[in-house]
Image 1: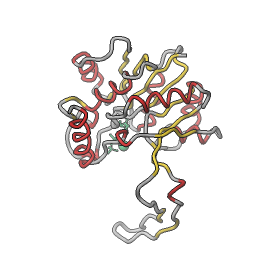
Image 2: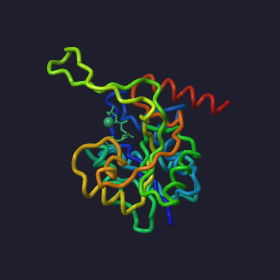
Image 3: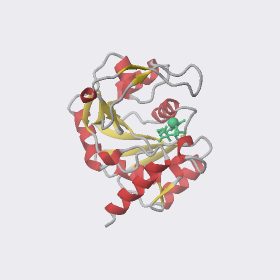
Length: 235
Ligand code: CTP
Ligand code: MG
């Protein structure tokens, strides 16, 4: 069965600060989105990439794809995104041709994911898992708090989950097509990843090892790290 990657790239990047939409910002002189697309197309398993562009930026993204060298064996589609990540992914799924039985969902904001991680996710879906996430153990201890009632008021800690059992989840997340479509058709509440929608269907999501370089570019310091990783790769 064929594998497609949906790449949500429609976010503004509010936490990164003022400027162009996050996915279009440069990393080593090349837009972050192009790095993320190349990371998907680098996997021989991926034959289509569906890019979900900023709502008013589909034409700009199409010309970016034309301007940058991308593998010949990969097809590309560009669709405009929505208000939330979830909506953007759903719009990408609507554009997916029927012959793709395995679907990856990969954040444009994770431009440096290594191809071995992509391949490991695809392999786990091929071996029968309906949903697969790459994930890493946490360095920090995590606490659950009761959000402050008044902004600025200290937040009381409610619980400390055992760190050894926690995982920080990355993308690409991989799915059996029918499972992902059903999840997007069923779950309406806001979620921050696609796998949690599959969990809500009562299905088991499995974890494969993630990679440090698959970190998400979210805040300004992440850009510094991304530039350093890229510079090290180019040595
Ligand atoms: N995304 C999207 N459509 C949205 C919001 C987010 O396609 N309406 C995408 C982003 O482009 C990004 C991925 O979802 O590739 C992960 O989201 P995040 O890191 O939160 O990016 P932004 O939403 O752009 O950043 P912020 O939350 O700081 O505004
Ligand atoms: Mg966001």
